[in-house]
Length: 158
Image (cartoon, rainbow, N blue to C red):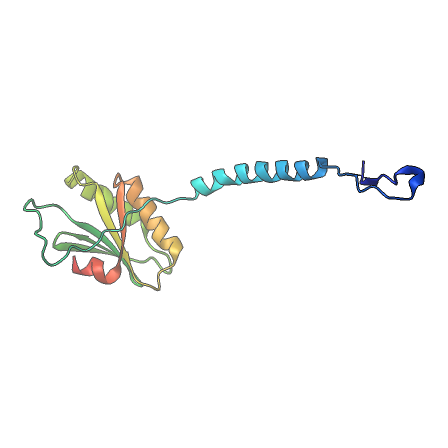
């Protein structure tokens, strides 16, 4: 099943007819397609949905209805949960962030403001990505589905 060349008999001229076996190439392409289909599922599972909120332009007018703003600031000392003008500090426990106390505070805020679904997470540049993901998971677990990730300077000024 390999390439064969026809010599053309007694005339001395060689024919250029060749048979090429395409089965190995088809097998390779089939395996590649199957591999790509299988790995495409894993790219969907590793997705974390967040929205980035743009700052409004200077000429735009803000809506008149008062909306509760909840911001979770992450810094090197722990969490700082800001609700409108009030804030509550949740310090670290040793070297670990206290996600349990954060969940309790978020649950209290959700019970106080059941119509509020959005929440902003602001972090410093030195914070590890794993800590940010754990914070966002705590927000999602406490029924804040619209989690936005903002810069810590933008989050502190809101």
